[in-house]
Length: 224
Image (cartoon, rainbow, N blue to C red; front, side, top):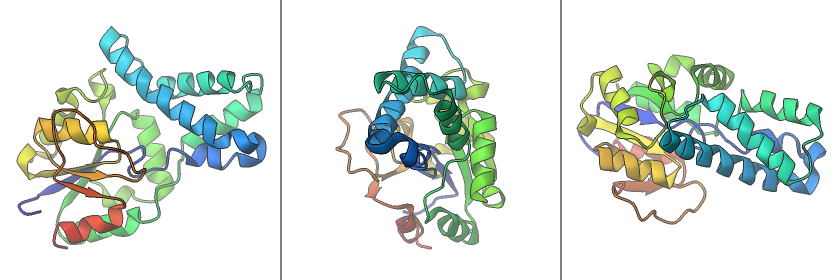
């Protein structure tokens, strides 16, 4: 990929492991850990889309908490207040994927601006970035909270164009979410889909230019 000035990353599932909170509670959750993680993530995303359509915005922390409550009740765990608080606390400092720091260092070394564009609230993003130790490798983190609407509205992707002062044609956007990758490509970003989870291609407008399974492959794709 040529003529790229900036790399913009989705946060959850792309830089940060959304399954990490439940994984760290396997002793508490037992064989329900993976199921809880899957239900939690599904409802979290569904609520962003549905609230956007309803015109009923609340920040991503509230959406995340609501999704967790749904998952806990579904699995008969809604009476365990201590477990809920533990899972919430862990979600504020999710593990980043192991290749992320070195990948960002390589992009920085190549002179590329690196930023986050996320549904996450500012407080959530600040906590996750700080916990991962990658603050110095990012020029900014853009949150939909300033708009009051979630991805995939084009207004969200425009935030990175305005904030970085880089044309959308010169921004490389990465997401592990197939729907997000499609929407970003439809907006006009140069998109690399980080297909960590072996998803199928979405039947949506917008097609990513490249598909990788780990961000470790990104610097080479950009000639670094």
